[in-house]
Amino acid sequence: MRTLSRAVKTIKDTVFPPRCFVCRSFFHNTLSTHTRELQGKCCVDHSHFAELMPSFLCPTCINDFSSIEPPICSMCGKMFKTREGDDHECEDCITSPKHFTMARAAGIYDQSLMDLIRQFKYKGKTQLAKPLGKLLFTTLLHIWNNKNIDVIVPVPLHKKRFKKRGFNQAYLLIKGWEKINEKIESGLLSAQIGRNVLIREKHTKPQTGLRRKERVKNIRNAFIVENTEKVKGKRVLIVDDVYTTGATTNECARVLLKHGAQSADVLTLARAV
Image (cartoon, rainbow, N blue to C red; front, top):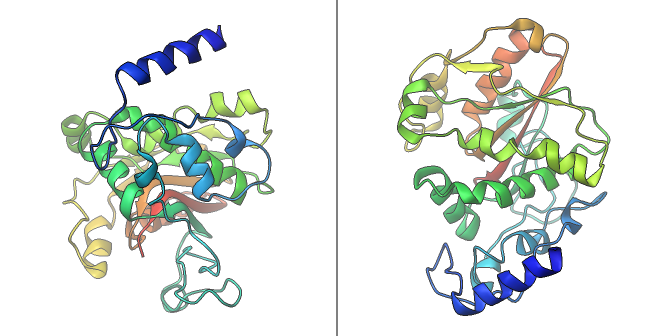
């Protein structure tokens, strides 16, 4: 059955070649999606991105993925300009310590990854949730391989923005993680997906375009935890699409810790530089 499905897909791609989501050119898919990126200990690099995106990006745009390489800030995950030395805290995290323990991302927010996230988030290309979600899960396996997580919490949208957009991109990214975990038997994801653990009570203006201090002020007291028992004493992983200044995820972490969470880490698809 699987062989037949692959044959049908090959014929379909030959007659109706896919169109690149980024440059909009037609191309013939010569790659195939595997599950190597989900097996055991691995780092997130160009090869993992390439294996997940052959149906969505042409070879040229696949090559535009920028991975995050050390040294990075041990707290916020910022990639330092120099490629020498060990991981250490950046100046911002030293002068303004975060409420979360650690933030990490699958790649840098530029070129192809940036375009895919924008199409997924703002143009309703929800078919991208599956490959992008797998890329995020790969990062989870690599970074948190020896660390337990009790609850995975997507950054929520306010009901007005949810109604306008029609979906919460952060939740769609993690929606299929339990099935992926069962399929590969990683043993890592014993955590629960806490879709409604955090509630966005305050309707804020978009963070895009705001400066750092404005972002912090804008997002302050935007979130609540309705059921404290869901986070009390738990190790929480906060998931979002993009880490820019960290104002949103840091506020989420502050609220979770305030309601008794043992710790809060952050995982995003991309990290702005």
